[in-house]
Image (cartoon, rainbow, N blue to C red; front, side):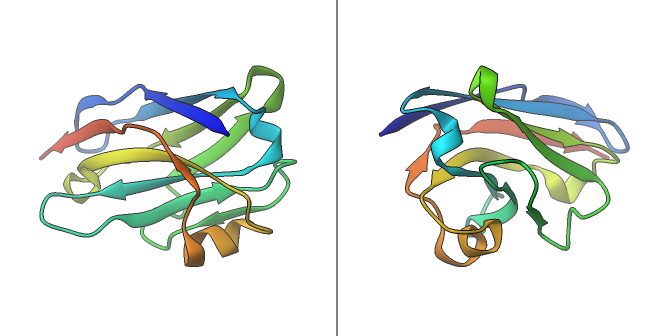
Length: 125
């Protein structure tokens, strides 16, 4: 089992950047596919990005492709989400996720096994 704690959320103007971090404890993060999901007010949780155990394979939602970058540092048991060119529609609670899936694409379809508590990202226009 793994515990996930997000940090780095906040308020930013449209066009700005934020970097989210997710620290994993318990079982090492390298055992899992890691990813990010988000939930906007009044909407269902949606997939944002996922990264394979080695970091070689990455998958993004179309809505963030080219603006967001997911990465991981297995030595630090940490996953990151660099968010650039932020838009008001990116406003949401962002959740770190870990899963025993085979590929990042599978996490998009089947979801995750473990979740962080979430961190709020607010983008003002």
